[in-house]
Length: 192
Ligand code: AMP
Image (spheres, rainbow, N blue to C red):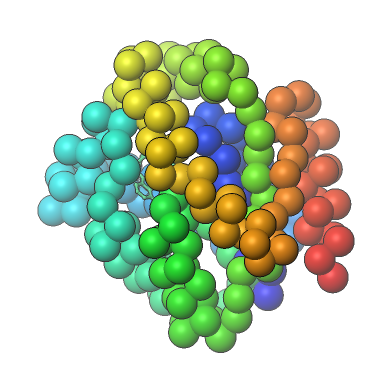
């Protein structure tokens, strides 16, 4: 299996690039952000809880997020592997993911592909996306800046963990979408 952690700050292009990686390698994408938004749209208990954090630009607590992620991995059938988009976002989640992949799939994370984009570009991109995404957390600059601050406070250390395991590849996330995809494809190609 190819199990990819697609990593980067909000607005770095993870969702867009995940679509291209899925097609290229026949993978299943699991986006915890999308799962939360699905739950919020359907007004589930989980959705109502998540909303209180998401609307402020803060991370949803680890236990809730990890439980949701695990269920999604368990219910997935035959695929070549997974793209984890937006998870892990803390050191704790990184450890949890390793365990889940081992227990449920008897496998391991192949690589962490990290999209690097500077902060001011992120803010501009997210405000632009907010014009059409309908996402409350994209529509307000203060919330966007909180999300970026959460990334540095809690998420950036995830990169360090993958670096320590020799599984970290950084890619410039600014430029032509297809050219960035080609660089990601090459990084995955190098795994074999
Ligand atoms: P995203 O679509 O990945 O930008 O996620 C949107 C929001 O969902 C984030 O700002 C968090 O509030 C929440 N969220 C998504 N994934 C996670 C995660 N792995 N851990 C905690 N909160 C998350």
